[in-house]
Image 1 (tube, chains in turn blue, cyan):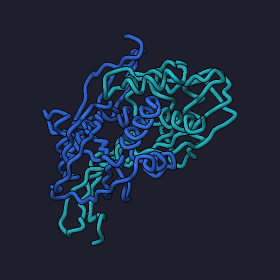
Image 2 (image 1 turned 30 degrees about the vertical axis):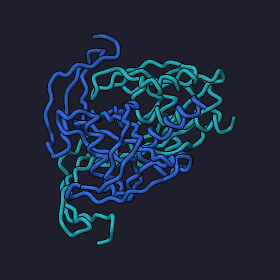
Image 3 (image 1 turned 135 degrees about the vertical axis):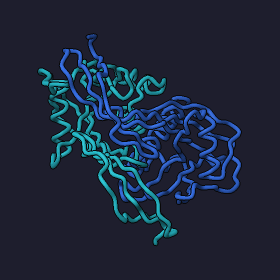
Length: 181
Length: 181
């Protein structure tokens, strides 16, 4: 076996839900011993750092059941199977914030938790915003807030925005802007 | 029901693994309708941004089975139940990199994927490093690399470090340093 490699021997789907599939695989390690890997399979996600003409960031406030608390996150959503990530980002921005964008640019990707989850989230920067009406999913409730960019950076630094994708998008944009200044 | 709240009505554990428990809960939404929430329960994690005297960052290169690729991540690990997060960070830094630190400071937390996962990862900054020997778990294989801090920031900006906790730790430290400059 090659160094830093693992090969699937066999596995089973232990849960097939609406948004998650969970697998338990038996793998061969590089020293030819065996181990089990528990893996959450997810279709992937997209998030959008949407910046207004007044240099504000759009946030959605929503209840996050796993943490039993309301979080501030940038608009985001799950990729439908086969959906183009950029189209997904535009769709979520429109559904959650009632917003379209003249400019939409790829900013990078993240693996939220690569040890046990296959999800990949892609980040887009949206500028030149035009506002209309929200159209949420039937089990989705959220409020939209605009926060000045510099305040959003402070909130990340002060541990007030725990969501990983939101932290990365805001901090990355801050470093890019500082590099350009 | 209050705005932006959900209440558990009942639920079942659909998978109990070694590192993950998966639950499927029936919840009441704010408009009194019902929905199901699929939730991954995880004990939480800790990661460490370890900075050498030469302003290098310690990385571990390891195979990540869910993504079937080798990733560059800062040292990290899973909280044992009841373990103090700071002690966990020190333990992982020692196990993965053979390293102790004179200074160990909290840098913030992240929810990797708050829509469906309860995991919270805490970030620590480690400085004043002393190097000894790795002591890895029996199913753990990884290489340690040192990368100059400015190069690590470039790697994040160029989408070469997908891991969320590593991106956040590096970008946050970059913004803090730029603010102090």
